[in-house]
Image 1: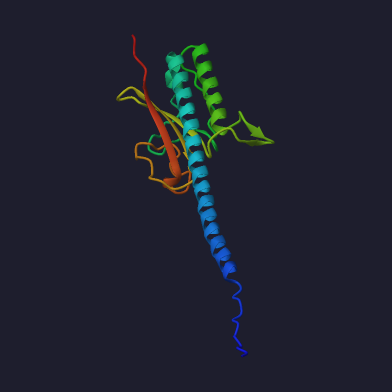
Image 2 (image 1 turned 60 degrees about the vertical axis):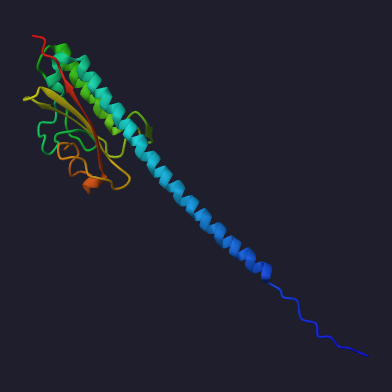
Length: 195
């Protein structure tokens, strides 16, 4: 008795399909991880720029407080609606106050020049490119005579769109393309009248 059994051929390639499906799932996971890293970097850059703006804001407020007798010299932004003139990137303003004592207004002019340099990032350079400040940093100092309040403001360009700054914050207005790209921090400052 000779029974002939028919032997089925062994299936090949089933493991290869499993490996390919696993690779596809792994690649999708890695793409998601890369996207998360990019979002994290963008958020970190926004946070860094905001921290730099707050440092520069506090710096100017401290300079005005230290030289109170020449406080009017610091109010360079005379058009509060448009936020001009300003210091920083693309600024053509040269501090030239001459009210008060010579020492006070000289210090005020030097303070404004130093703040302009900080806004343009001259503290850190790579070749001839300034790197030490936020993107498109601009600074405004305005004075409201009705309330006797100085408003120190720093504006810069963000990396992505968010809500536009409030209408009362005009520093850098219209200079960053879309207003949702403009970031602004400000601080009111009152100088006591001790006379």
